[in-house]
Length: 282
Length: 277
Image: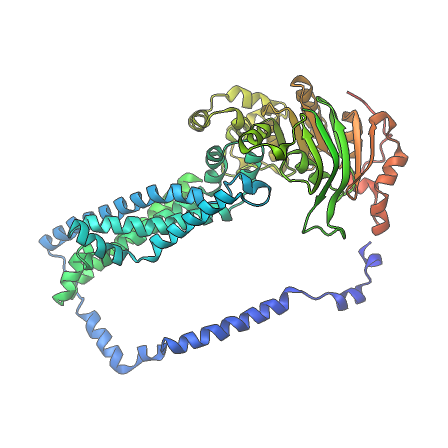
């Protein structure tokens, strides 16, 4: 049947994958852009294996061993770990509270006017304003937010919590909106076309459709918050970070290693939690 | 719901057709409570016509009236209320894979529920019986608490139809309800849809590739080809010659084309004995 309609020889000559030339040119373009970047960053990976740098690195690392496992230090670490986890958790919770309404405003799938072509003017403007707000929130590094809040509320975890909340609200809001938009939107569309409300659509189509991705991204961000609380500790926001700062300043490598092991443990825990939650949800 | 289409033209920028028109000057009048089948070759514009009727696509030209109202002149609230009265069932049932069947079916009632009621339904469904009965029409009652992603394609399609059944809409727009169903299930599905439309005085419009099923269940047949209405007749006046004509253009393009292929059945050509209901 096909052979009568399209003689094979002619077809083979005519058929060419139209995507090929674009793929080729974009690969070449990417390489052309990347090469000067490597030059500008003076990226010379072989210096890592130079004998001088190897010696310095190994000296530095050797000073870490063995980890400090004395009872009163561990007690102190446990106390600060708790504080770090609390700081990250409270921070991320505040961030979620901020991010959810913002992402719902920003998300295009839940726009009734976008169902049939273009979004109406006012909603489109509001959406752009919200996106801009999310960009502002996350383009300021949490370190800068923390430096600001340390001056407002003083030294301690509160400034860390606020810093994490603001930056992470920007990240969560953006990515929540993108997750909701990148999933299959036909279910949500069908409900709204049949007259369901936007929030009804959210709870009956978008959330169950994307719950996996939303959960795993939130847990991953919680993990990031734990890590960034380490950085925030350096500017006096308390927690493990402040401890590590103190240990590093006193060249106490064994204490640093203990704290690093705690971080490893916390990240591992968040991985387990994420896997378990996703299993629970599906 | 009463429907009037006057010279409706739909252009689609991404369409393959030369003029870019998916529908060309389609005029139709459908009375409240009528049951209409739309048939025609693939790409004839059947789905676009349903989308126009469902206010899912705005026509480029022409006048659309649903219950004597122009939906595109309504404000957002009124349009939403109008949408709550119609139900568009796409060809591929829009079901969330992770959802349970009961929730998916009850989603058909969302327009009639407040936000609070619909959230409460997520905690404990208040209309279990309704969902059960709707599914029972399609022999799926035992799947009530299954998850959608455990269902076969045909089962999902029937869950989508159960949602249409429970929606209580005044205009049912069903796109290809039989694409994943065997003949027996197809009979059952169309019978249930017709019966529900009858009981709730709803207008039922379905697109069908199965010509013999359209002739069997629907008193009025609209033949659509290349965006034009070729015929719009009571089923008794639809002759094999008209059907031949309807699908002929396709044959000119591809000599291997056969009516039976479009009809999706390898059975011998039916005698086209209309059984009006």
